Image (cartoon, rainbow, N blue to C red; front, side, top):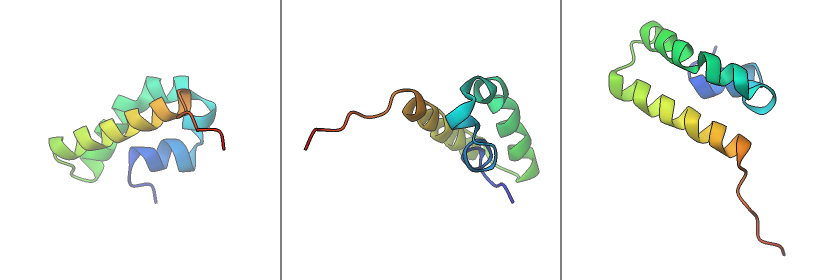
Length: 68
């Protein structure tokens, strides 16, 4: 069962890794649907939206690692 936008776009579809344009196109609709389905508050939807944006940013701009 998918319970968060990250779960849907990352674990279930792999879109965050392989189809970021699809995520950007559908993220608002997916969050709205999941919010309605799971009775999320506006605060919940905002948190899940921020979590998804952070995952998208990390997929596009990975953190630099220090050389060992």
